[in-house]
Length: 303
Image (tube, rainbow, N blue to C red):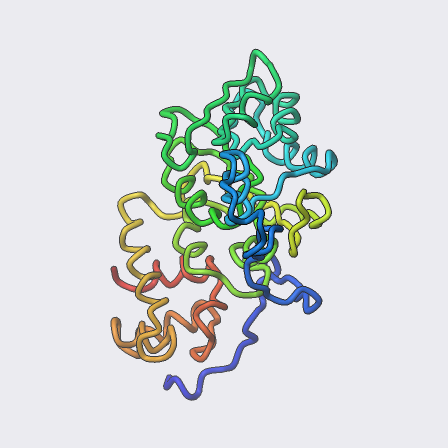
């Protein structure tokens, strides 16, 4: 059958991933937190104390302390799926989440780079406090979990660290609302990173946390993003490199569409047959292809 005679199919039919759009929450740029002291004022010339300098750095990365105890309880409830699993907390801050985690699991390793804040964390036999940078820490050899209200500006490095840790079982991260929606397909589109890691991880948007739950109050809400490692990968380990090559190639946009890219690599007839088996419109933008459909394309196309 020639491609032009193919029956047309709706672009979004999968019931598990059909989510409503939220036009009342347009995409916004990362919030910028400005120094409250105007430049050029007499105070701006005075040398800043180490603590204030660190506070400025946290604001530059979008660091906002979790102040609402209900939000901390919610985050801890989601983070602790197994009380025997050690939880590594990213950026403990003033310990609001730390205390809730300690009520739910046996051991917490809290990373807090500010020594003043680290020294004020609650004394508990199950708590280990580390003042080093979480991103430079070596992942534990055994199974563990990660949780934290992370600085928005460090979201991507923290996610990368978690994805690269073989022992990670769950990461529960309070991120910018827009980021959490983007990574979990909540806009009806799927990011390259989500598709790339789908055989090994699930990405879930677990909850929304209002901006008023933080101090200082940011310009956007937070979203609880949960990464769970699958007990059994959807693609055999020896085939994962081939799957990743397919996804990386598909997201290049070579030829103007995913169908055009795959037609160049595998021939138009074979690419069309694979698209038809997945019920995919050849004109569908690459971001609207569900992760499950990528898996089917991988199984149908040579690699």
